[in-house]
Image (cartoon, rainbow, N blue to C red; front, side, top):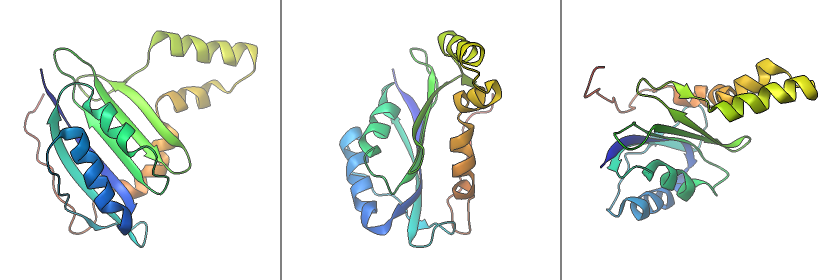
Length: 164
């Protein structure tokens, strides 16, 4: 069984770009050459997108391979398939890595135990319930990555293969 997904490198210093390609190639087992373009939101940084196909769990392996580089912002997504839910990993230098399970339409699926833990913290410790749920949905990562997601001039266009 295979799935497919996309690696979005939102910003990486130029010196890191070949290392990103080597890390992705190491996970996928094939030579990888990304089309790097300048990232207007971060002078001196570059961005790239890469569509991949592989076994379920490949998104996790890609996110792990890129995890240690603090100067990078990236996201890795995988589509759900017959044997696995979809996934989204987001990483920023200030927040670290975020992981979410996604459904067929891209919605984040929050496990019951995580919701119960948030409710318990809100009741027993006075945690801000709205902020806790926002974090479960990855909003802090979305807020930080949004300026970098903008497809500036020269960014590749991704065509949809299937309409649900």
